[in-house]
Length: 150
Image (cartoon, rainbow, N blue to C red; front, side):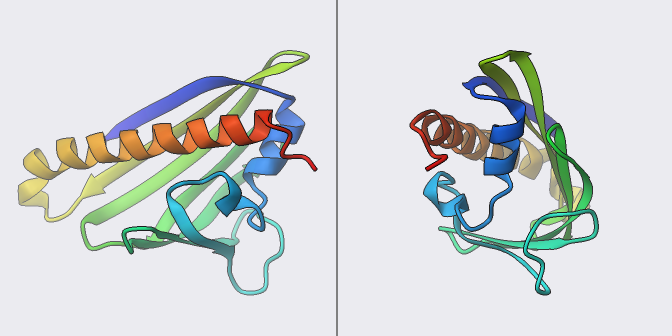
């Protein structure tokens, strides 16, 4: 299942991309993540770097950066995650619309497990992920527009 959530955010792609990938500040805006960090001593994201995310509900996922092209694209693919997910990947895109506004789009792809229950699980998981993703993007927009650069 694939879906995208997108909105226009005040700011430059350079600034917004940098803020979105700053793991030291992720909890300031991300209502999903109660803990997020880069693994194995990494201090900045890059292709091949692993990230750890834990949700308020206790879901844990380790993903690997498969694309990192500042200030336009960051994409990850799950390498460890909840048993409900057979696969998960996601990407963030930043497209400058004007000198003061950028379109930020989160796109996620996932498959649930077990296969024989996908007909039931994927629509439910899809609604949950879309709601979480909209809340994350709303949180990011409000935080970035409130002067998070300080």
